[in-house]
Length: 363
Image (cartoon, rainbow, N blue to C red; front, side):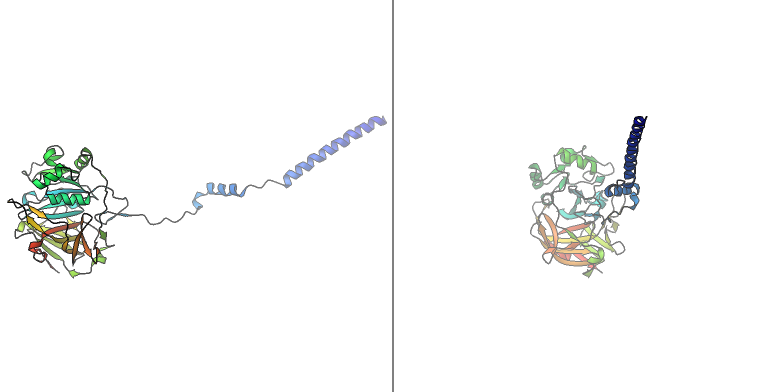
């Protein structure tokens, strides 16, 4: 019995030691919990409460100026400029698409008749016309600006340039009734039109680029107010001849900061929507003209520069113009003069008549 008792005592002692070790291990686990990683805790907070995250302040939205108007846009305007010869015979008025032209150039064609070169880049109208025939200096204008050129017909000098693909172009002589459509409310040659959709089709058909490649050297004021230094000029008259059908009158609207145009008292509007043509700048520049045939066709020097009057913000500024990399640009103190953002109308008048005779203006 004594031996048996000692055996039980030994077993009890072993059990007590095991129980003590287990308790000690349990106490150690409770006393020393594993601390969570700080990064995990921060991530959990961020996931649970996203509204409390401090975002960086947004900067002002980036705006892009249109190359030919200076008007700011949310999206960059990358379309290739399109230059269209538009009929300005009295029977062709009102014209279609001209209210959306970035720039309208008015040139003598032959005799005392003028034609428009309408440049479209920031907007593409649904319908342009009536389209009329090309002249060589129209083509040189398109070449200088790397514009896609549109005309219906041509003078002999112009045809020679177009036949050798001097510029990317489409002509109604080859596409009459397809890309060019005839209206039924007017008689030829005052009824040829091209749609905006067919302008794109013409570019594709002639394998022409559709994106702008040359940026014009035009610069712009920040606002109309910045341009109000000069001689007061609220009413402007521009004469190509004594023929009243080609005498332009521009009236300044101070509330809008733009000019409207009338001929023989009739307001210039767009035929498609009846909207008045409103421009921010009226530019009259003189260039040497020379009659080259018995029809009265002209050779016009668009390279040498000369005198120019810039009308903007109700004032007039006399300066010089230069051909800068293919663009006709008013220059002041040796650098391109600033224009008011918006559309521009440019008259190219003969030097022999003198700019002082071609233009008059009153406060």
